[in-house]
Image 1 (cartoon, rainbow over the protein chains, first blue to last red):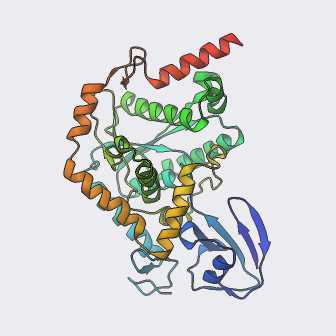
Image 2 (image 1 turned 30 degrees about the vertical axis):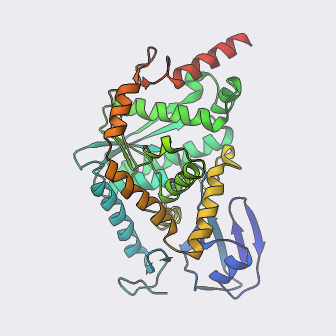
Image 3 (image 1 turned 135 degrees about the vertical axis):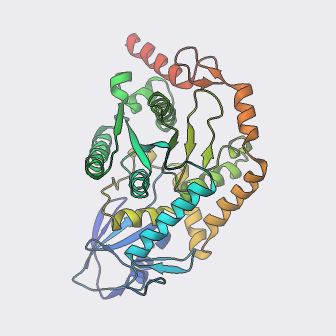
Length: 64
Length: 311
């Protein structure tokens, strides 16, 4: 699957299938600080993502 | 995962409440939290005119959207700080959002452009007066938000500060025992003296993640990138520390800030009002309250004008 990350912007390819919870763990990202979006829909941590998915992991933390 | 309310497929789980929601039930949850905060803290009523300070980010645009959806009379003000492409992009996001909401609601967007008044953007302005950019930015925004609220006769000024902002700020103040800042860290600051608008934070019960999720669900097109000036800020460090605690122990941020508010509520706002009335007087240049001879905003602009005329 293609995974776009924000802050800083980057794109990586990850082998699926993989649960959202595991994906965040593998990337060392905290669920409380990120949203996982498949296409343009939010997905929960128990969702399985597969190789054809395009995923955005959006950081929700701002410094203001 | 299923929505706890309607059993539809869930789009978000909230460990601090041990609950998951579908899109519709999550939006109801967000609206309920905002309404509860507004009422509990007596922020404003449906008769009041509210000025929302917007930046193009998720919190402020979401706040404006929620207030309008709930039937409040909410306009917005944006301060164009002149931070290169970042300000161009954020201003565009605000303008696009305003164009959209004004099609369905009676709402107005006010814009103040720093470069038009000071001749330079905030970064150059801060360099001229040898101050950190974020400090000059804070002075300008506080001044302009208050100025527009008073000039346009708004009853209250609202900002998009959320639970993470308030918990991180509290952590920073407590770590350095800056107790003098604690009494002003409440979701409502009264118009303690002539020249100060009442200020409120209706999103104080919601986390950044919840607000971002609401923005994604409702297709609120906000600026995702961080302000380039915020890189390495202490607030980001405190937020990261709190989110690590929250992951291990859900509800930590809420408990930390809300219990602080319970303590503050026992003291009331009398001390803020008394202190402001005793210590503040109108700035001789602009009339806004200050404890100094001239307010920090007028001082900043005067120094900048002096520096540019020396060049």
